[in-house]
Amino acid sequence: MHSPSEQNYIQQLSIDCVIFGYQQKQLNVLVPKLDFRGDFWALPSGFIFQGEGIDQAAQRILEERTGIKDIYLDQFRVFGDAERSNSSFLERIIHLNEDKLGDNRFNRKELEWITRRFVSIGYYALVDIYKVIPQKSEIDESMEWYPIRDLPTMIMDHNEMVAQALETLRLNLDQKLIGFNLLPETFTMKEVQELYEAIYDKPFARNNFQKKILDLNVLERLEKKFTGAANKAPFLYRFQR
Amino acid sequence: MHSPSEQNYIQQLSIDCVIFGYQQKQLNVLVPKLDFRGDFWALPSGFIFQGEGIDQAAQRILEERTGIKDIYLDQFRVFGDAERSNSSFLERIIHLNEDKLGDNRFNRKELEWITRRFVSIGYYALVDIYKVIPQKSEIDESMEWYPIRDLPTMIMDHNEMVAQALETLRLNLDQKLIGFNLLPETFTMKEVQELYEAIYDKPFARNNFQKKILDLNVLERLEKKFTGAANKAPFLYRFQR
Image (cartoon, rainbow over the protein chains, first blue to last red):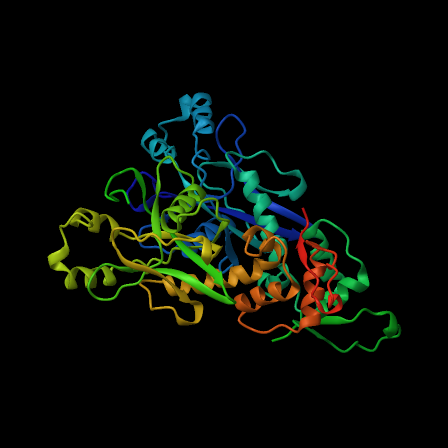
């Protein structure tokens, strides 16, 4: 991370990333724990260079934190309440970590810069956990996947950000299914249903679900391979090119 | 408008408002023409005070420009390409209006402030044209409703903003129908259909449309009044409380 006190970033504007990870029928969120005494968790965040588009900044932050490029990600909301940036959590960090301040990770000048009011643009991504190598930043103690139902309490409005990102993910899943690139080359309807059930956190009726997905007109059904028990083998699908 | 060069605003962050107006089966957009030689149109815009939430700032800007309070409005997207704020149009304004600069509307210091790169949060609203009294600002020559199909070419990415706001309006219309407050206390299915047709710019089949709207479960059907030709009178509806 470049020193945020430099004037090379747009001031008072940040990006927070909700990185959803899917694996084994489970939806998770990537959450760093800050390397300060006091147990602080915060979404992966960053700032926007003066010469950088906001989408490019989000891609850069995501790449720095996950090691993978060209992830599909999108804005979902801007968080800009006047009160959201009251710096009580920063005061707690300072109070609990007086001895650590002044080291080369986070000096007082940077603290001043970062304790101003911030408006934050929320981005979300949905990735295959197997493709990600979480990269903690120099102010993180660790960075781990947490099941969506068992997230730690994060600083500021970050838990609310996850809730709103999840709402957007659910609303857009039908349209974005291909883009998320979460299914293998060929897959069964059951695998699609498991993905939906993880994201919506509820079961779907099999027949209705199949009809709904086929009505999206994005899948191509492949021939069943002939096997001894062909009639019991599920159909395989792939996305239309 | 307060002088933007003062430090009371968040720098490099603006709000642009796409104000849709519905009237007589027509969808329009409220677009000011700037009071500078050269024919410049721009969406109603403003900045965010240091102590003000972004939603409150958008409400304030909308109220300043329409004279009405408590309009339903919502964010639809942030526009933040690095190149969007290249100041070519401002250079043209300056070139064409050298003699006007320095008057009390727009001095050079303000021009410097405003020609920096800006990230802009797009908000949209949908209002009843009859309830609005457009209020031009001191830098506007006029402020008028333009049919959505006949908008002037605006500065920067403002035409693209309208396109994206319209896409969001269409996506959310089913959910937001009550909130927009565009229909009278009681109304016919035909009036709902006309509103949808204006917003989607296409006709809907009557029976399918009625079923779709009733399936939203937000309408209450009222008893037909007894009249001589009762069987020909259309049913009246109102929103469920």
